[in-house]
Image (cartoon, rainbow over all chains, first blue to last red; front, side, top):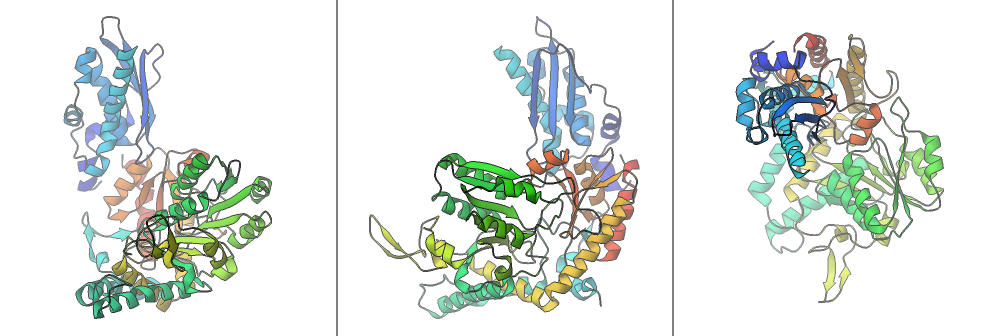
Length: 129
Length: 405
C-alpha cells in the first residue's frame, strides 16, 4: 500500500471496516434514524437503546457505506454507548477523527460526518417523542 | 500511429504527477481534459478580441460576434444539423435539458404523459419530474433488461396517444448502453411524441448525424468533448423550435419590447437570453476542429478498443463484476464495475493512490443504481489520449485491490 493510501486509510479505519464492533440490527431500539450521503448514495442507520433515565445502553448501526463511513459509524456507536443523551448530542466530528487517526480529505469528510448527523437525528427524534 | 501516441503531447495536464505516479485519467465521462489548441484559442480570444456579441458596433464586438457565430457553424457541421438556426448554445447538458423541459412543459396539460428510461442521468429525469408535477402530467420510465439495454417491447406498451415527450440517453453514463436512437424516434413518431435525446456521453465519442437520428432535440456539453466548461448545445429540429415559445426571457432573445409584451427574435437567438459564453464557444470550435482532424471514426475505434480491453480485463479478475452490455455488444466509452467487499469510493481512493483517476458513486443515476441493486459503482471512461498501457495499469491495480483494505 502506498503512503497516500496509508494516510487516508489508517489502521483504525481498516480494522473497523474489516471488523466493526457495533454493526447489525438492534432489536428494541427506541431511537432510530437513517440518512444518505447525497454525494455517493451511502446510507447509514443508527439505532440507539436509551434507558428511561436517558442513558444510552447500546448503539448499533447498519448501512451501505464505504470504509471511512463504516469506521466512523462504528466509532460513533462506541463513543455514545454508556453516555447520557446530552453527552451524546455534544459529540463533535473532532472526537470521531481523533479516534480514526486518519487524514480525511475534504472530498471524503462527509463520509466521516454522516454517522454523526444520523446520530443527531436519532437523538432529536427520541427527544420529540 | 495509435491515436494516444498522436495526441498525448497535446494535453499539457497529462504531465501531472499524482501521488508519485504519472496521471492516468479515466474520468473523461465526467469531464475530459483539454488539448493545448483549445486553451490557446480561448486565451487568444480574451487577449485580442473580447467584447460582447451582436450589438457592439465596434471592431472587437464584430470580431467577437463572428467568432461566436463561427462556433455555431462548427457545431452544425459536427452534428450534421440541416441548418445553423437549429443550433442553440446553452451552459451545458443539464441547462439544455432543463431549458427544453421547461419550454415543452408549458405546452403540456393534465394527464399528458412524459416517458423517460431507467438509464437516465438525473439531468434528464428531474426536469421532467418538475414539469410533470407542475402540469399534472404523468411520468413513466422504460425499464431496462438485465444487460443494460432498453426493453423496446415495454417502450411500445408505454407509448400512448397521450405521450407528448420521450426523453432518453443516447449513451448511458453508467453502463455504456448505446440506445437505438433512430428506431426509438420512429416509434415515438407513431404517437406524435417529441423526442429529446441526452447526448452528453455520445457527442465526444460517436460520429453524429442529426438527419439520420431524426430526433426533435439533441443535447450535449462541450466539456466532455475536449472543450471548456460552461457551454453546451441544444439542437432542435427547426419546425419544432419554430413552434415553441421561448423558455426563458432576457436580452438577445427579443426583436421588439413593450412594457406588457414582446416580439421574439429569430432562431436560434430566441432561445439564447443574456450574454452567451463567448470564449467558451471559441474553445468549443477549437475542440471540434481537433476532433475533426483526428476523425470521429478513428476516435470511436480507439476508444472502443480501450473499452473492450478494460471490459474483458476486469471481467477476468476474480471478485470483479462489470455492469452493462456483455463483451461483444457495442457500448460507449464507459465501463462500470464493482470489486467484491470494497465500496466504490474506496476503490476510487485506492486507485487514486496509484495515480489512476476513476469516478465512483451513483453517477447521478440513482434509479439505475437501484435497478442494478447497488449503492454505486466505480467507473472508468476513456478519451483520445488514453492508452492500452494505461488500461493495463488499471487492470493490475484493480487485481491488487482486495488485499488493500
